[in-house]
Image (cartoon, rainbow, N blue to C red; front, side):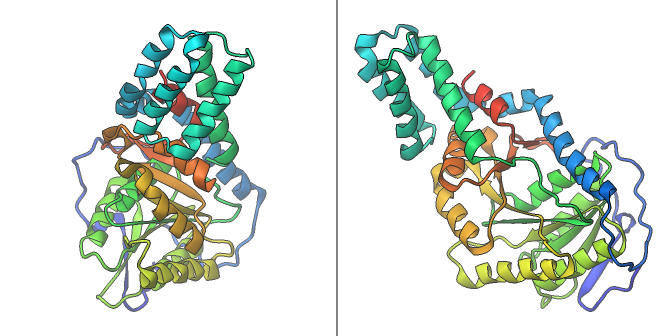
Length: 367
């Protein structure tokens, strides 16, 4: 293994005791063999690898709809009153029914803008004679939400480019679940045979590197961590990407410090981190994923706007949605920002970070 530069440490899976609190994942044996610092050559095989990977993860999400269904149970309970509302619907009560529907959607954090858009679309179709029963109104409601998610939230699959290593950078505010989401994403990728290198770019929080090292152990991944208190996050990330490029890793997962979107200096640091990895691998990071706490509902929108303006977010990870009845925020954030949701956290288990599937989501909340 190459010698570590100052203030950096390369840890292999054997350098820590194995964590046994989770069921053992079924991974192919890890192989950490240096391939040398050769110039990168783009091949059709690499293009195909990342294309297949994104599609495979998405297809597996469709076959695991039970997790999505159970994860949105609180939101579904909130919206279940729609069935009762529409059961005895008749044309003369259209205004009353739609007013109540509007209130139900707002309570589930669909947001004023998208709620009015949905309700007025339904009103127009009802008055035009296109919707003649409560069941037809509900189906039209589901279709309206689904069409919006598909039109404004395109490219919900991971877009990992065409050269190795693909670089995924995770950002967000404190306490949103960035490091945990990164670990669960590593677990999912490892299950598909991906060779992963983690980068502990959270150089502010003392326990962050320790937490990420545990996830490296759980997933059989290597990790690059900072040594000393003065190491810059951008240096840690660039060295990790350089190691990933030289030693043939498929994906480098970059953790970053939690920061308020209003903290100018820390947001500037994110720009430096993004530029640093881009100097090592052209076009990196391939994905810049913003982790948002689903329990905050519509309060996540100002955060998302600011992060997007500063570094250009490519996708969202919405966490803790299983503990919230505010699942409508998924629709709102896609509608407001036009950024696709890539993953949703629907439980505390290691497999509960689910690839987002619009159709499964709509069926889960409007069952």
